[in-house]
Image (cartoon, rainbow over all chains, first blue to last red; front, side, top):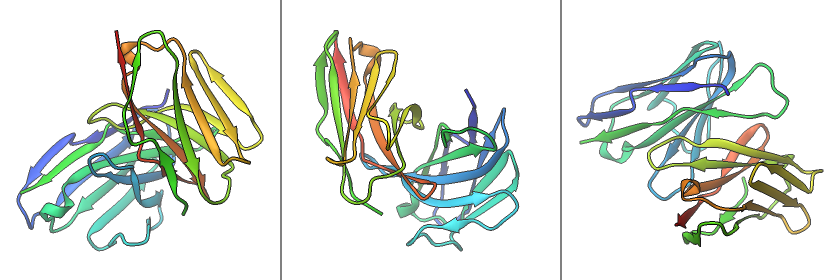
Length: 117
Length: 110
């Protein structure tokens, strides 16, 4: 199956710093990538949808100036958490959907655990 | 968006038995519904997709049903194994985006 990687897998930073998370589709071209956030024992919450070469679409309640998303190529999307605060600590997961495929399947990355001190 | 309900209590089951998980939704029936497996500290892994015009889908020891009248999907793991222990998420299509339930943890004991 298709593989999606995320880097880093785990990051600890000080409050006020910015953190960049990369999401890559390794063996297919992803026209659309999605960014989710998951708090313990809760469901994945969609933060934003990004299409290659265009601006991301953010879900209601997600600050676009705080969570910067760039989808510069068909295999790479980045999420930058700007001026991170402890309440931003969470598990961030990306997924990618390819050009082909009739089942609308999304392939998920392994996730990035962000801890803001 | 709609409310998606999955049993919040963990399902403890003996090896070899069938585990049955429920996913209920409240509003419109989606074009398709998906089930994922998630292990601790990992991203979800796709298991099965079922469309609104399909009643049942099978893959190896997994079976999914979809009842648009009841607004419910059932997920079955037959002949369960300890390796099946994980959290299982249902996800509904919502205009090309997925909306997830909180998941049900399954614990299979030898």
